[in-house]
Length: 185
Image 1 (spheres, rainbow, N blue to C red):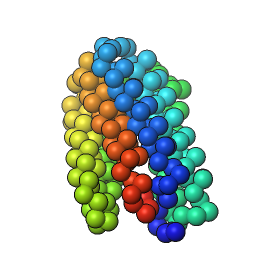
Image 2 (image 1 turned 90 degrees about the horizontal axis):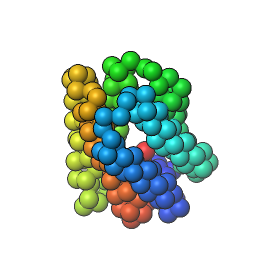
Image 3 (image 1 turned 30 degrees about the horizontal axis):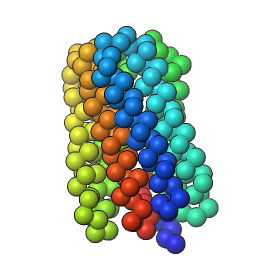
Image 4 (image 1 turned 180 degrees about the vertical axis):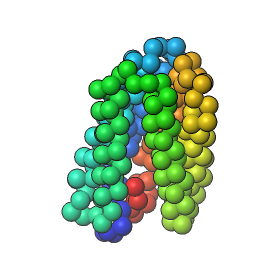
């Protein structure tokens, strides 16, 4: 067993569950993009918090067997903190919400691109999916950073697309990663 990642044989379902939750949330956003930002902030926080808890659980489950478990823990803690912050303060200024979500999307996009190259080096023919979705996440995050005036209706649309993209990527990870010996998070 390698000490450079997390063994996918028993943890694939975490990625699948996170992906399904993100897609459901994204579809919900498409149905009501004009919802007030208090509800959206709370819902964003709930989804990000749940994802963070799942990632923290996975990190602790693999802490004794994998050298890089701390990456999953750090990512999970950041998601958890952002989720709690958004749920506890739903009256955040629109710009602050946009900035936090944009940074999160940019961070996730960079991690996805990094992972794409790890997949490519491992000989996985599907590495390009991780790369494409990473670029999409960076694009969505960048649009929100550079054009915060697009909030309201477009925040709902862009966020829905970003959450659906990230959800699809997580589901791809769930079904493609079991063929890999390990996974870097």
